[in-house]
Amino acid sequence: MGVLTIDFLVSFFWLFFIILFLASIVSYRIDYANDERSLIGLRVLMDELAGDINLVLAGGPGHEMTFTLPSNIDGSRYQLWVNSSGVYGIINGRYGKSPIYPCILTDSNGNNRTITLRPGTNYKIKNLKENNRTTIMIEAV
Amino acid sequence: MDKGQITAEYFLIIGFIIPTLILGSYIIGDTLELNMAIAAARDGAIQGANMDELAIYPKDAYYEYEMGKNVLLQPSSIQIIKIEAINEGYNKTYEKYKIRLTAYAHLKREISSDCKNSLGDRINYNMRKNICITFKTENITNDFYNPAFSYNYMFTTSDVKWI
Image 1: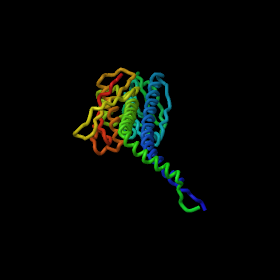
Image 2 (image 1 turned 180 degrees about the horizontal axis):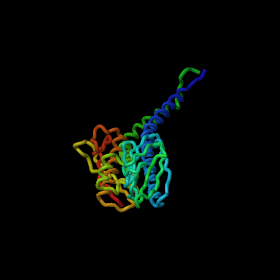
Image 3 (image 1 turned 45 degrees about the horizontal axis):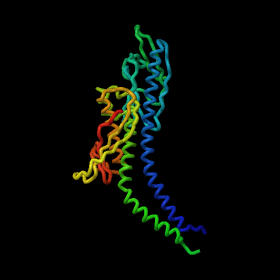
Image 4 (image 1 turned 60 degrees about the vertical axis):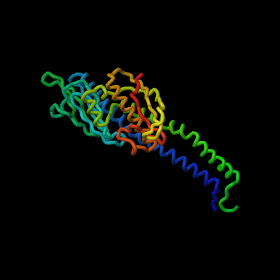
């Protein structure tokens, strides 16, 4: 039959308690790291979208790009919306903004308003010339 | 072989180590607690600086910045240089030793002192919060974790020094 010496048992329990203590410290750090990762994800996403809108604007009439929104950021739900001054986002109750070059921004119907973007959707960003003025249109593909 | 055995050597070694550890822990306990608190404060300062860097804030702060401090809505690069701890003696009200923490940080762009204060406040808040979380003393302080408590010390923060 298998035999466990008392030496082994005592040493094992010491080791067990040390690991338990370390795990409690590490778990807090992991939570913080995960939280921060989603914030970084949102910042990167907002900056990428703002950068693409600026590129389309700088490219002149006829220029267009496709932008894909992920369905979530590191497992966290998020919201994103765009208006003529910037890209705005919320994740885990925190808000952020990436400014864009001021422009006239319209939805697929040509209405100049704040456009809410749905996660997991592809959007086309187009530079159009309407009534002698440059307009950026964002429409779902 | 009889059941459950422990060797005399092992018993002697453990018997020596445990009392030595207990005795040693009393001697170095105070220093350890203060070191842990300063390490927690440093961690907190880095967390606060990270949040400032990403410029993604809780709702109230975000709308406050959108109204008057738009520059804070753009990411900035902040480096925590050091955390200084000054012992201000025994506080009779709280029956703990009072430690004043000062963070030294570097910001890689020029912004107004008012905006720097807002960034610094977040660093200080996270320093105090992290101390309270480390010593599980959130329930004996206020919403701003000011002052922050460990077992034998209380911590306050002064304005971040930008260098």
